Image (cartoon, rainbow, N blue to C red; front, side, top):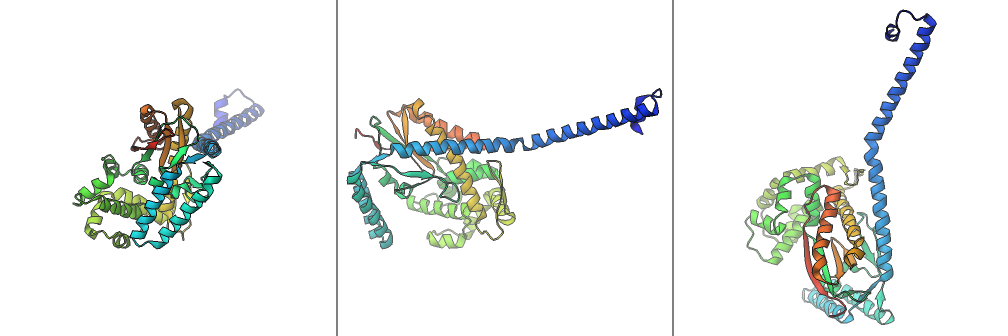
Length: 365
């Protein structure tokens, strides 16, 4: 035996047996320790990811409670004016169903407003399949942005309300996950969708055309929709060859999307590998929207946790945007920096671009 030759010729057979057994035990113990270290190292990130996810859930739950308890006030004149504008627009377009829905929404708020000066919306991530932050009672995320300009903080002293909107947010998350260098490069442009239109020779079109093209891109690249159907739906005079040019430019992202649809597995930024049912025909859409929501939840909690330090108040997180009440414009740059840093912390990239815009003055308006 190999062990006996190492023990020396002077040892007796019984000593050889004892020492050989002990050496074997030490070898087994050493192997067990190496295996334990290997398992711990291999799954160390899972423990970290679980702790990180738990911390995120705790922080956002606390933030939701604070936002709900302090509530919002409503400039009823602005609300009524902007809702009437929305209703009139739908009626002029012949969209009677939408006009009726908005009328009912307006009348319900007008009926409740005299009874309470403060509304206490309920925020949650549990009612959405993708984990996006939703708001109900009332469903403020379904209000038009112009109507949301009627929202005010319940605490006086904040003179300005600003919107912090994550530009081309879902495509930015797709660029991070797919590692598509062309997509990442084009997202650095001042406006991503205008850049795309320039590349296919359609850069001279108006804003309505750009919006329709944006809907087309999101429907096909993010939601996995049929190109021909959405070209017709959005009434865009694009050729299949023009769209093919875009798909070829973002071939890496297309392959990433198609692989998830085909194989039904995807590695999340939170460290979890998701397995989709074979019959699920929207695997990629659900996954990319879940990832976008996951990152945005980090962004939201980061901003909320700095309310006291920056003397500001988060009014509402909605879609990929945060409405914030500030006392002056000095904190705007710091809020943008926080959002970008939070994005980088989760994704490892600083690709996020923030569009800021004044929504309205605060109580002093």
